[in-house]
Image 1 (tube, protein in one colour):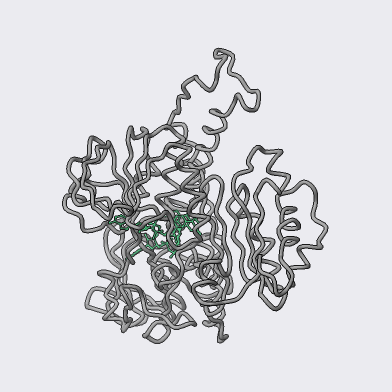
Image 2 (cartoon, helix red, strand yellow):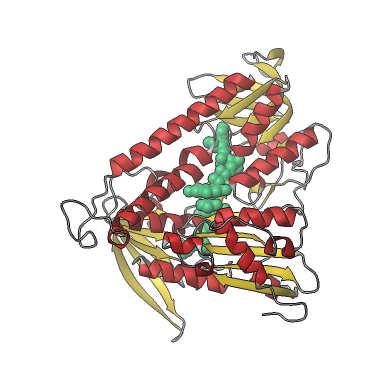
Length: 491
Ligand SMILES: Cc1cc2nc3c(=O)[nH]c(=O)nc-3n(C[C@H](O)[C@H](O)[C@H](O)COP(=O)(O)OP(=O)(O)OC[C@H]3O[C@@H](n4cnc5c(N)ncnc54)[C@H](O)[C@@H]3O)c2cc1C
Ligand SMILES: NC(=O)c1ccc[n+]([C@@H]2O[C@H](COP(=O)([O-])OP(=O)(O)OC[C@H]3O[C@@H](n4cnc5c(N)ncnc54)[C@H](O)[C@@H]3O)[C@@H](O)[C@H]2O)c1
């Protein structure tokens, strides 16, 4: 769809007017573009590199693809347990598994190519225009695009949406940047397995990739500055993950941080680590040798150099400042997803799309009070929604607690995947479900059933008394909610 040229920004550039101009082709922004274009609006999306944004290209979906290959590797190693033997080897446990990373990557790359094609099809069927180039604001609602193929264009939107996402933040550690560390982008695209991968940061990315790379055959060491893995989750969850990682021989250094790094990732790196020994109250400084270093130490917003000041868009802590309607400080200028400071999940960026779509149409939809479910895709998964036990304690919120081991969910026994537990918080003086955490096989899928009950304001007894197919993983919810203590008695 061609845009109408209405006036000129400079002697050589015509301003092209659109109903909607979107900066960054991420989760929420692409859905907004396709939706408004299908309504007959003139829409342009500016993207510098990734058609579809982070999720399909180098974040959620590629990581889950590699994690699944790592699961297959773990099944291979567990072959004996299931009575599976390779012809040539009697003892599969003793046999060395050879992982061909090029084939692992080939499967992932085919998936990504298919996803990119799916996005291109959506652009052509919706009529939204995809412009490959780097966008910078030059005036309110007006963006100059430095086209990847050369040349520039200037676009102005009746509405403009910023969805430029985040990037890996590289901590200011002596020698770290010079060591050319991997971020998740390179780590998810390795054709050769690192011999010894050192991972800085034991958050979502660090934990998921540590286990995957270990299962594929790398030696892995995690360095985390806090005292335990995932300090924001309940202690029993954190301990469960620590035990899992210890069994899988992933070295974990907590209360530790790097002082300096030397060498070059991909060849050899030396990290000087400072680790605090809590019992003795002393710091130890030592050197750790590895072949690669991956930085998974949090995210930085892509707001630098966007010319946001020229657009009247203010920042807050580096992120685009938005209100609960996802409006920025400039009229008809919105922000979506990670860069708006929304919780950093694809499903949240998608929900931001729904909010902005409705508000552009004159509605009043807000981010406040929405559910923020999450799932860490370690094996087994850690899924959580609503209030956690530690949050309830910290905020003095009374609750009744139900907790069962995954082994009480009989499906797990058929799978030989009995590790972990399910827990739920129910209000102390009523039947409302306040929160759910599952650390176990299929926890992310089980959580969705609890989430629907919470959305519908169902009492916990609805799940307790439901007839759920046997033996499914969700059947465990009957056992879990049967454990809720009576009112007045918290177990
Ligand atoms: C390794 C990894 C695994 C993850 N796994 C999960 C998961 O399993 N589940 C989950 O829910 N979340 C996951 N996340 C988080 C999720 O990927 C992000 O929250 C989500 O992609 C954010 O989407 P977004 O809409 O904010 O924008 P993004 O998808 O980040 O897109 C922003 C786009 O803007 C473009 N851009 C930036 N600046 C410009 C510019 N000036 N001009 C033109 N284009 C520009 C970028 O190239 C990018 O394509 C993961 C993240 C990582 C890093
Ligand atoms: N399954 C999923 O949904 C999924 C998967 C991957 C990423 N994500 C999203 O992406 C975001 C970013 O992930 P991430 O893992 O980069 O960040 P994170 O915030 O989850 O974890 C970063 C970790 O690095 C540690 N750290 C930071 N600097 C350090 C230092 N100098 N020394 C030692 N430790 C240090 C922090 O204490 C923290 O534990 C997540 O918050 C999440 O929202 C989601």
